[in-house]
Length: 236
Image (tube, rainbow, N blue to C red; front, side):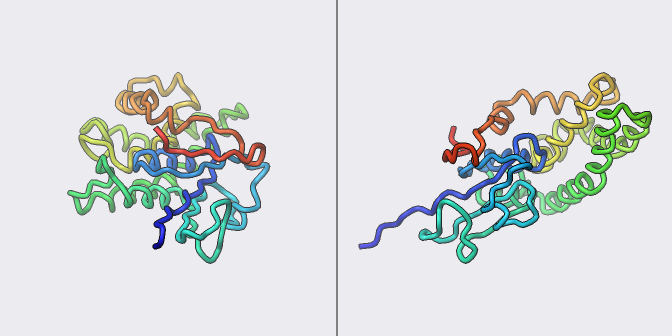
């Protein structure tokens, strides 16, 4: 008689304040997917993570596909590697989406969400990095860099003037994919972000940052390489 042994938990390599890792953690919580979280720093990357994903950035999700697959690291013959944050989000939500964040009743919704996320990642994020650097190094181009971010931010503000969330009356994948980046934008110059032109985005951001979900996503785990402790992420 065979025993149906459950698969080992997937392993998530994560960096505490990386916006890409944050969006992955948010999605895993929303999808109610438990994983073994391994907190790292960019100055000390685990060899096993680099073996699975030589790009060396987070998040990296190692999914065990066989019950006999090693549960302590990467097994190239039996494990699946998901190494882009959006792919981690979609992996989790396609397994379980209790809040309908993918808007299954709207056939065009996911295409629209992915388009805006791509704009965030490829256009807004580089502009945001310039804005952050200008603030950090007291550059005289701070306002120019902020204005470079404005077209994307104002599109989001306009969306929120029509609905409570970016895609409609309920949250979506888009809200949680953009949350870490809008959080960063709001913190570069808090006095500017407090102005009326960001009223809807400020309210949206405040609701998310004060939520229990965000607190759970930002819980600080011990560094994997220092402790070797098994940390199960997603336990309520």
